[in-house]
Image (cartoon, rainbow, N blue to C red; front, side, top):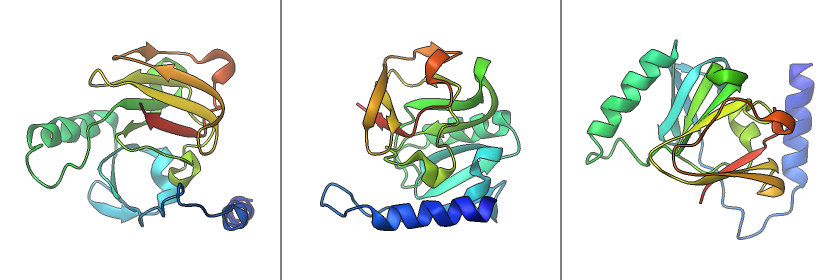
Length: 165
């Protein structure tokens, strides 16, 4: 079943029209506590993308948050490429696996988070927007300035793209 969905997703992406607005996604590398893991395992862990295209995952949110704090302290180095603007959670009430987002994602499915977001916390006084369809399509949910939403109501498990605004 999982292979069938992956194959269908690949075919759909191949059929999408190419335009200058669609920049090629860099090859993503993922680690769990320093060891390589497949991209498909991202939503099973607590991860961040501050070193994109490297996504770092950890066995728990506490270890991830310590790593994020340490990386923020060394912003002057080349290892940090962006500032986090939102943390997304798999379950309501800021529970389950989570992902600290610093990049724009036209297709959250590329990191396994399509239709999975059930709660979120805005970070670093940044603003952003979720959309229910790929490439900023469909209904949108804008957030601002460290907003924390523990339940998304009708938008639960509906977001397919996310952007800093």
